[in-house]
Length: 295
Image (cartoon, rainbow, N blue to C red; front, side, top):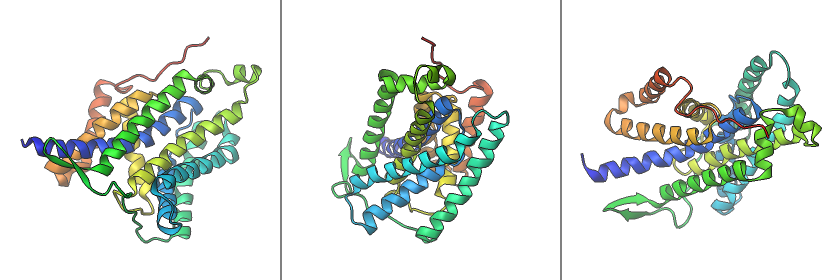
């Protein structure tokens, strides 16, 4: 085994892991706080990629500013979706079934809207200035943009964890998953809290799509592929567990990277094989869902 080859594949896998983590962390946040399993979450990844393309290639904005705008745009779209549609089915006995049907329908709606606005042609974004080259690590040339994605993914992971665990807003968000009626009696605007959490989660998905845009073509239907891998990540880590999603993303990213290198024709199967093995021995995932203690 060539150490240089291993480092190249490991870096590629870790890059994809950070993108998957951004998407999966949003899914985890929605499930853990809002108690919604959003099948359309991958569509916000696609929206972020198209918004980044528009900002960079059409409007001529700076790439990093476009990242922020793409994330904010996806977040606003997510907040509208929650406040106008999903909020109306909270508390119903058949809520889970309505969630599945409603969020799945949004996959079809958003895909058609994307085709209507941007067309069906593949779009592409150049890597940002200063990040189109490579740096040498241990004798191996590693793309600087990949390193930027890894660094940004780690920063977002730590920042999101600190926000959820060390701030009043984070404690309110986590408490919302336990007793919404009690929070309402304490004067907390629970509907607004759920909408903001939904917006943050979808903004993470949009940010991931914008980050991935320079690495792959921006196409309609891109959300379907990423949502499958993200669901596997959430299952691997444990439903509702933030750091479980982080570990699950790293596992899946590395498995995919080395599977493509060694058995390209069967690479797509390995994601499901890993998930099946974990479910057999750890049905609740590698980490059980995070619990929030009542005060």
